Image (cartoon, rainbow, N blue to C red; front, side):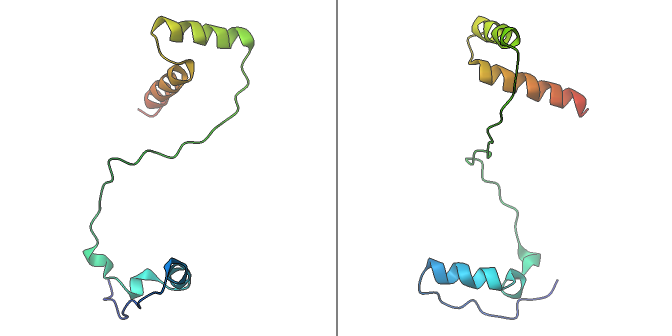
Length: 90
């Protein structure tokens, strides 16, 4: 891994800094061999909304099951999908 060969300039504002990093390779400014992996435990994963077409009776069945265990039906669906994905990836 090559050593950094350049010094990071001082920036007037965030806009100038953003423009600088968009045009320059960070490996010219940082010794990546000394990089340390960090964990950010308080970050929440990015979520995406999806549209899923279900028959009315199928959705009602899911809602009934969710009611029985006192969880929102969307949460129950996520739990079931996560369990099935875990099974499938074993």
